[in-house]
Image (cartoon, rainbow, N blue to C red; front, side, top):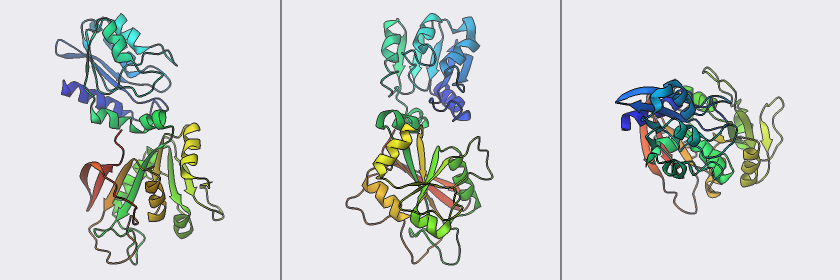
Length: 313
């Protein structure tokens, strides 16, 4: 079972962002131990379940459907997926995660009412794959990922160089920008570096919105968008404009403001094998500790990327 759900996750990951603003959903149909249909949600078209059903044709009858998120039970841009699954006489559905959208939820119950066996796995990997969309539909703000590059002793500057981390880490940051709806820094960073914040040297079907939080003015020629209001209000406005994810790249002052407002969902800390010895640390003194979950590490060139969650999806 795990292998087929992993295959569904891999299908969605391979086309991540294609279905935006809809969530990316992968689906695999298995009959007699053989995959008879598979697919992921299309841009402006069929949901992943329907792509898999269409590929399987008559072979869907009596099969097991593995899907990364609960099939929708409402009529939106497309008819309910649960109706198509029942009409195809699928025998069993394995669901990787619940649909948090109140307008579309209830698919598990509808399938069971139709006499279809349903197993709800509630996979963290499935929830994480749609973490930005899930936050957008439930909290009505973008999902905020704070990215920071630090020395081994937690400094955000190194004397005599602009860069702390190596080429591989910096390329990963551009990949993160390419997958984000928006990227932001504070005005302190703008005044010090006048950053571009665009995705360069990587495949980027679209560039993120590039934001600066704080008091202006912006430097002459800056292409950043100035946001001067309260953070929670600005995030609500961005969400209303369709922004589902925000990559926060500012310094410790901006990060402190987001942390104090409980608006950081995930941390990405790129750690370089350097002892800075002096200079500002990447996080200021907070009024209370912030507990993190699901800490993982990944070597990137000579650096290490630490990932952890403040709010799990």
